[in-house]
Image (cartoon, rainbow over all chains, first blue to last red; front, side, top):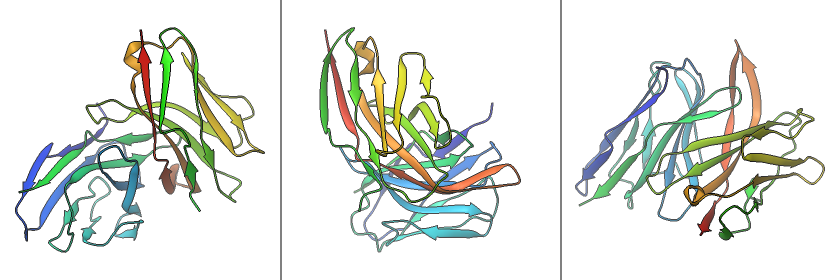
Length: 110
Length: 121
């Protein structure tokens, strides 16, 4: 079945560490997005990519980095520069009349 | 200025009644798309309905309908015959800067802050 997969579902990070969240899709869509969601809040755009080897910053890109080496994959790295990384992270890809989401990754700093 | 505005942080409705969740948007594009998503406490994003800017008819999907008023830049979600399972956070979203290349849709995707809907028996 076609879809978009995020892993891991839960992730714990020590302060000062970089961690990478995986996002893979087999829907053959070009546009992919990363959002951050804090409790009781909406989705804020971190980065998005519309084509392989190209990506743009969203509204809250500081402390994050991405790559888009393959159409299917859009990993997000939360760097040590991100001072408050505890949040729920959602990856999405865009079809003609629907945006498809992964199940999300809950990141906690310990 | 916010691209998507949802002015109702919380809404309450009795089971079997209809409820309208408000959404206004801001864009100067002629071609854009509007979406509604439901997010239960599990966190997954469930797609409900889509309206394209050139669609003349209001979109409907089962108990969901989108009241699209283009001149007012309004895209309210109407849920008819509410059920207890409808209790969740609801997000309005807009795809702007739409471009289609090789059949693939591109554009930036904005979300509102959401409306927490509670259905009571």
